[in-house]
Image (cartoon, rainbow, N blue to C red):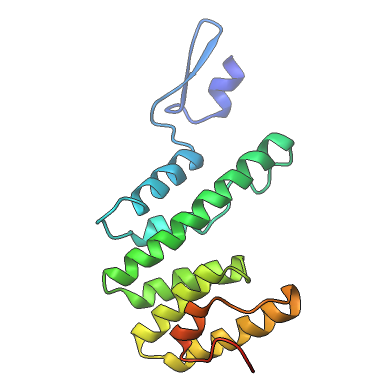
Length: 167
């Protein structure tokens, strides 16, 4: 117990007999990330930049165990969908550049995710770069054809001002 008290900052732990306690001042990165996720998914409240940045970071990436992998997978799914929701909120709030940054992150994370591509294309159109939206559509179309043998959703073609099927 003496070593525990000596090895950690004094304000984080205290002992009572043989019991070591952590103070309420100690907040885990997991808790901070959960709070950020909760904030960015609140309806009607614009996402904060620091919450978005926190959600772009993996948790427990250096921990190797079945338990950690299971929690990491669930966390990744939740943060991916929260970031996409935040991107839509940013667009609706008149922040297309931030929406594009968030959607670019999502597209790089999941290169075949059509809803993320659609979000990015919408952001490009709102920014005034419809040619970037069309280019993104063409790249996605090629990739979907090559890797899955399918065409993109018609909404993507419409957003890019492209024919739904064809070259």
